[in-house]
Image (tube, rainbow, N blue to C red; front, side, top):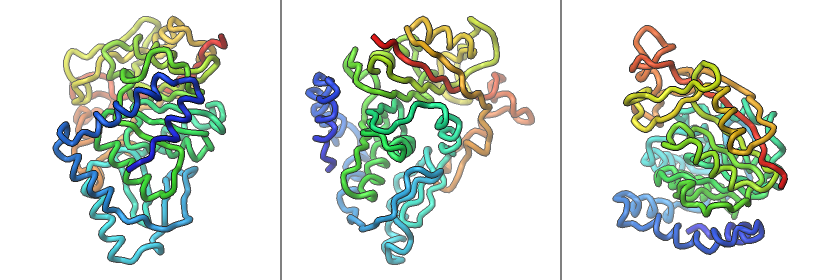
Length: 327
């Protein structure tokens, strides 16, 4: 089991005592085996996982690497690969775990490359990653010497994948992924130096409320890194799909970049910068042996990759950086 006491201590030091007091109960409730049919099996796999010895850990490269192929016998490596594949689908990565290359659905390193030179240095910062998936970007943040990284994601499989990797890492790295959503955080914490929200905003029924939640989790002068789906257009233009978008049911608001900048300003953010706009390619998001379900190419219009199968603009993602006021 993970020792969460360092997390509680860090939150108390950040004057987030309310969450530190509430968090043990939230974690216990989220990991109640009666709430998820596979959770007990997944937890048994983690508990039975040997603590492999390695000094090979690379967190600041495109592929997060833990261990090397030479650290394990062929039998141990084959067993580990079967365990990892039992946690299918793997959506965020890539990872190299003791010589096992996990070719995930998303090349999440491409997104990191787009933003890493633009953000404030993470060294010694307390960082929150909202909707972090299995924690790939959390490891990259730790590789930038963040003091502690807290990821939150309500999908239990994502959390289990992270816990599996954390045990392979060994020791007590200051990085955690919790089975929670941002609505589970106390209002007005103002505890984190940097907050990332990547691939979340368009899933929220109220994007303004999400921006306010992000703002209120940041210390005065803290930095928000926001990545989301956008459309081409001017100020005030927003796409609200009538039903699905790229086969996703839970997509609500796709603003233009000027519109989103206006939302950020209205929510009290300052120094708002648009640092990247990129159309998602089928090289960046695709099916692999580690994610065998349909992926982006199946959600685009046949013969026209600039449109989705619903005849809407194909996915285009923008990254914004903004600060909270200093007081």
